[in-house]
Length: 346
Ligand code: SAH
Ligand code: SF4
Image 1 (cartoon, rainbow, N blue to C red):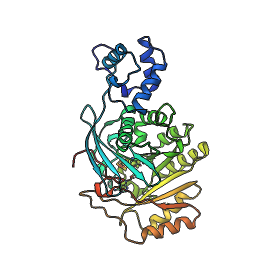
Image 2: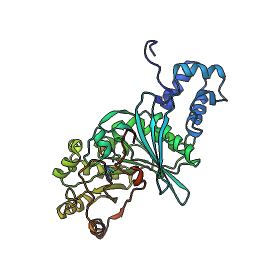
Image 3: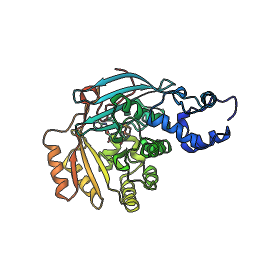
Image 4: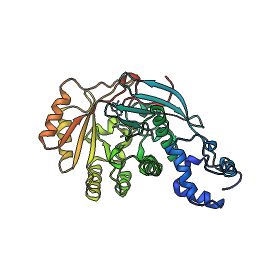
């Protein structure tokens, strides 16, 4: 690295880069596993904690690859036990992360992949915020260790459904998932990991190449092009016909069932026409449909669909032989539910 450039933080390095960095300074490759364990199994926030590394190495690493841990700026606890954290990274970037406990001792973490989001979906609080930057692989994982420490409980499930579009930060997300899944990392089962995308086709193609049983969820929200263009303006470059073909190719390549997410918004995407368009989009797709009642977003004109609509849609979809369920978000009283996350203080 040129001496006049800022040192690369430890958490921005992939496992390969970390190994290379260690070998450059004459260290054996097992040091990389030691560091990964300290970082992501034990949530170390400084090199001083890594007591099985020689002190001189810790000092050297602190200089060339500083370890920067996020600070918890705020934590809110919902009446249903969900906890929402506002975290600040060393450059002041703020993201929200949500920990969702359940009775059977599960702990699900909903994490962010970007600071803000460039996609601008009109019903989503993150969409209003605009985009600041991508998170590094380590910054994604630090959210997880922080939640794990706060609950004092192992994470069992992961969902990339916080702020940001994961497939616009593909490499960092893929590396973070690999470490989260690895026995040397957080040891979370691949089947317990879900990534939600607004339908970035190149990302779907790359995700298909990952040989892991991760689940991919696609935020469809409209199966009529004109409606989708209106509510997900930046997804217009990923047209529905191409999206469907990408899903068919994905299914063929992976044999992994996809989840289709559809948030019902009153008067926007919940008419009979929208339902028939959805049914025809679903035909020939091995998928599970999640119908999501719209969560309230401050200052947004959009309202959830009227009572009864979700049930009617559920019936119509299951009548076609497609599995469907309603996803009720937790943590609504602390604005920690889907689409309610934004990167500023209360
Ligand atoms: N960018 C990715 C992942 C983050 S959003 C994506 O769009 O898929 C996680 C989920 O919350 C997505 O399905 C998103 O469409 C949904 N969502 C956004 N705003 C919402 C709202 N106000 N109510 C309910 N769900 C919402
Ligand atoms: Fe971004 Fe997803 Fe929100 Fe759309 S719904 S603005 S893609 S976070």
